[in-house]
Length: 154
Image (cartoon, rainbow, N blue to C red; front, side, top):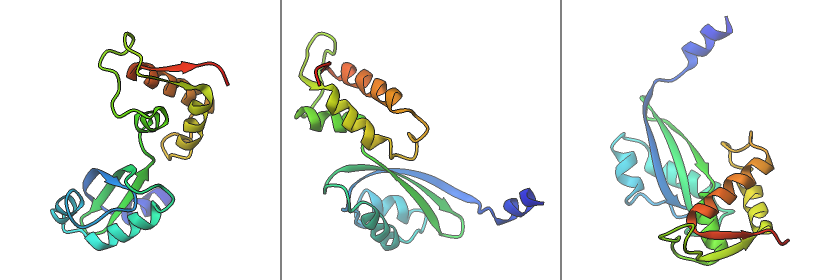
């Protein structure tokens, strides 16, 4: 009986929209306005809610947003933390990664940096199931592919 009740209460999905929006800076201008306006969603409601949820991040931090639009003009969204490569670039103080990873080392970080990034990413809804060790290994692999050397010295 519970499955029938859940099927009736479920809304039909119109679209899934993925955006990259700076934290605390959502405005009804591009890229948010055209993406949401096409599906006749309430732009100001999204902007206010998104800006309230991302207050704890520094301004201009790129946030990945997955928005689910329903046919009755309502929506839900999930704001993820910034990507691992963005955290690594900020920690290393570089603008771009190496053009030849494995050959050119553009910067170096310690395991402490990796651990701090892993702690931040562990709060992400899609990384909650991963252990801290698995997240650290993933971050080390990303750093190696960007030309950032990880020093084992704590």
